Structures are given as structure tokens and as C-alpha cells.
Length: 161
Image 1 (tube, rainbow, N blue to C red):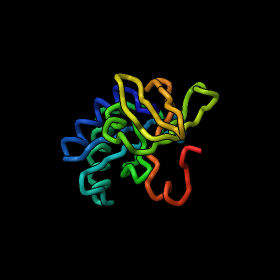
Image 2 (image 1 turned 180 degrees about the vertical axis):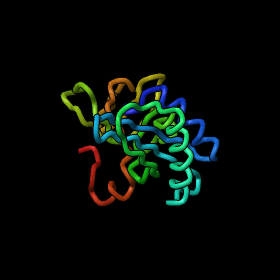
Image 3 (image 1 turned 90 degrees about the vertical axis):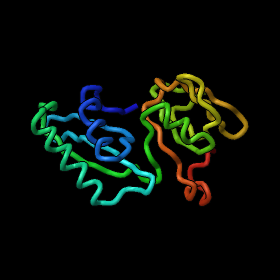
Image 4 (image 1 turned 135 degrees about the vertical axis):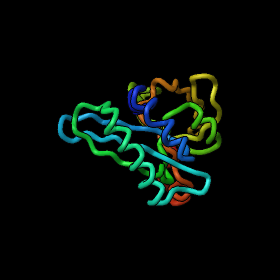
């Protein structure tokens, strides 16, 4: 997955959780001039702009003091949205029965992008049901994974075909 390096996660996650939010995931895309540090937060009641501002202010202060990123970067705090990204195996467990789109580093069954319903999670392997077949996907083989919102499925969007 596209999770930020462990040292950033270890600095940021406790602050987000200490403020009362779930830290869904942290992305870091380094670039000498245009890096991006994106933090996804959530609560049972959803996330408002004020929540993102509050977390951004706290994280920004810590980053100024700790200075863990040498290059220039932009800090972005966001809700995960209806098509939430997955960063951890526990998120697949949380959404068993839901449809996801998974991008792979290397093809499985000649596919690098698979959309299917999460059937189960067994250790480090996610079992997706796609049409009439089950596909076992090792978590480490995934470069990216996102939930497919119900409204996209109902409108004939990404439905695994």
C-alpha cells in the first residue's frame, strides 16, 4: 500500500488519535519541490472542514518542531470520502461484504486491477469474489485499494466486469 514511511506514521497517528479521530491512513509522495503529505481522518459521525483544520494545525506544529521531512511538501488533511482508500488489513476486515478496487504491483490472473467483493481475510491474504470466481490477493501485492461506493455500483459503475 501507499502508506507513509513508518517514522512519519509513528509521529502522526498518536496525535490524530489523541484528538479523537481515527487515522485512516497517511500517504507521503516525496518530490524535491512538490511533495505531498496527505492524512485521512474519520469519525463515526463523519468529518467536517473544522475537523481537518484542527488536525492540520496540530500536525503542522509537530512537523515544524520534529522536522522529519527534508524536502518541501504540502500538508493535506482530508476525510477518506465514499471511495475511501485502504491502508491496513484491518480495513478489509471492517468492510467484508463491500466492493473494492485493488491495483496490483504484478498481475494476478492476467489482471493488474481487480474489482470484487471482499469475501474474507485470512492472515495477510484478502479473498475477493469477482463474478463467478474467487481471487486470493496477498496484501503485499497491492499497490492501492479503494472502496467502491454503493452509488457507483447501482449506477453501473465499477462492478467487477
